Length: 434
Image (cartoon, rainbow, N blue to C red; front, side, top):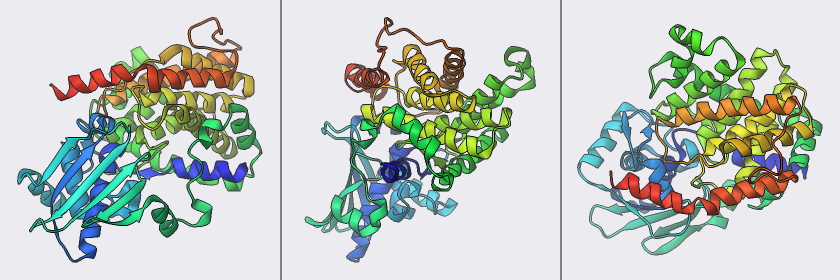
């Protein structure tokens, strides 16, 4: 069990440069272009088919280093400078010259983006064609943002999901049972985080390094809606004050401000989302700093926060109509409870308080405005933690809350993945018709 949980964390917590939906498109395009080059053909045009949720989350979000939004420029960058070996950091070699080349591709109408008829939530099919149209390569990503399941060159299957895994991963890094996260329990997560040798989970501190760099970038520069900067502004001190809550909200929102507006720094993601990774980690880091928590306490709190979010996400799937900050801020609430001396009962209470509070917050696509939702999620995270630590828990008589914490989490998953499906479709219709 211990080794499986560690592999789960390593699988779901990884660096990501840019919003992961357009990055998934860039990754698929990059792999197709590489496949063409392997047969000595130069990619000329790109045709991409995406699922509705990929389209929704790629329409309005900033693409790193470009000053532009959307899937077209992301696909073009994947063609000119993407390297599939970098996975979610596929655009790590980005430079001004590459941006110019990518913009020229888009201007010349060499990149086509269309909606696929697939029922998959997370799906990208990227075809790269040679200039004479005699050769093509198609890469399919499905299930996870960096899961390449197929590469076909001139009609011949070159790579399958199993071959990609065996070629690129050691036995210790193999993808585990996709239902493992869902099958975990809150009790098992807490037992793991508090008993595993510290050196085996110390890598979780990479979350601190990457996401604090985004915080600093978001506070220093005027990204997006400047939610983080505004919360900390002297003019607003009389409104927000110098409190733990203001500190946590501002720092987390600042990181989201930067990332969603196209900052070129990577985030440490959670469950395929950089914003979720930010919201899982930064509030915990902020409270740890304010309370002078030890390094060991922070490592364990972050581990709990990441795993709770991964566990809940296992009930929802990677993409849904439910805003990811609901899940991520629930994770951070649990991490904060642990930092403040709470145990299993208080952590369960925090999850129930969160579920009874902001369940139903919709995802209307990735964009700079996500920083507002992140800030709201953090406010609820601290509120739920404070109530839980004071012995206050929402009753099982209320709404979708159950006495059993796992049933409560399952109810939340059902609401987000099934109950809100019609809302998801309506949101997309509104967005594409604007």
